[in-house]
Image 1 (cartoon, rainbow, N blue to C red):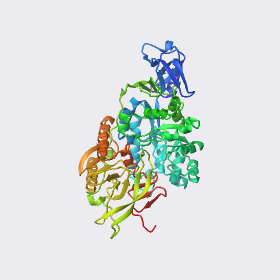
Image 2: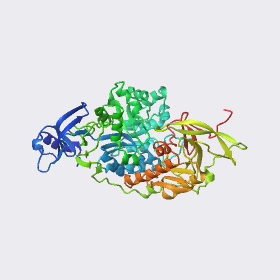
Image 3: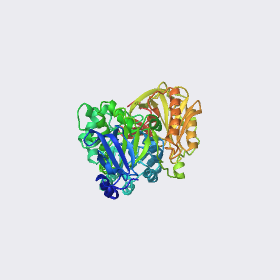
Image 4: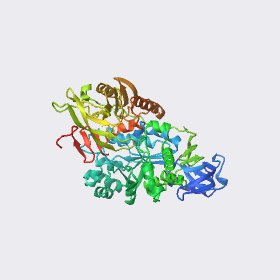
Length: 597
């Protein structure tokens, strides 16, 4: 059992001095030291009270009759992996089920920002996520969401978060800092609420998470950095990452289910030779299918190595660097005395098979199997009844009106970019039938359905890039960040049926073809998560992916692209309950392009 260091200190000293037996001794491994970037052979490790007590050779009296002895047999002993920035809700499961899924992959610490549930349930949702996080057998630190809504005036969230609530949460156990500050224009403009949130975080001695999704590295970027953001994960190029590091920010390179940003940025280390200490690895968004089938932080580390990074440097960026960034380098992030005993045994540093995982001093996984209980909280009814449509939707609700007498109309179109969060602002000339604008070719309908207050509101638009064919529709109540309902389709009747189905089951993701349900992933908790095991959710996600493929969509992890189409803080074009949003100028723009200008 993990004890606070202040309580464990006397026993750690006794074990380190060889005067008392340890709880666990790992014998004969290769110690990967991320402080010095050395690999030291023939090393033994003693653990007591959930912490590393001693690293050396010949444990002697540190092995007693009750000591658990594990033979490393020459395998590498590496620190448990840390995810620097992520959202549990993107895994489609609650914190407990997320921990259950990632422990076998060697993840022993995560820093998560529950701003998805915050947009649905406000501070109560954050508290529920924090409560379940604290129960887990690994370290799950919660960042207090900063932006709900992410861009005031451009979207309406279910429950807004105030500066006073942010200040209140800074006193909670388990809150490590402020979640990603997405409203970067407001920070640069000196907005009172955003600055108050950042001041409250710094006053509490905690870390302000960043999110600067703009290519502009001029005065606006300088103002954002001066405002106090400590890190960023929205870089997509080497130059953008270097710009952050030069200004003293931490650069979090991400590999999620759909975000492949490591390869473009890691050349700053592998080719330019920059100091890697300010670089970290993260996932940001990984859905359950990725977690179950491909991995978690082990997947990111392997990818970084495949991109040319030295394995020990990659491990450093997934352990010590992140611990140091959050001020926890004396608590975790390395195999050194006093730190939480988080450790992985692996026979190969490049392919990184996760053979045994120790977290907080006990074996939690072996050969891909989680060996510990990950406790769930009792999620209340308020979290399970969050989808309120307010009316029965019909196909006509998904038909954008054309100008009177028009045969064709030029409209704005959201252009999906594969494997990246940004979209493109496109236009298309589309046909008009019976006064309604119809999709054509590669262009599909997109609609945002209000689902928090039951207003019955529907905003219509167009999207390109999914490649759908046939009469289909996909609907999701996971719609970052305000989490209304996004419906994409080629058939308005199927769109109405899909939306109605999600309203009936309390949220999730569903795919309809020719008006009939093909695949559904129920997400009854806030319309974002399930408390079923990740393997069950992943099976549903696999069926959903197959339905998308069968309807012509070949994008990598197209579901993730779908879920971000309402994210009004990432350029270029998005949809919200207020209308079509041009994120380059942060303004609502008309769907139909004025031919005069």
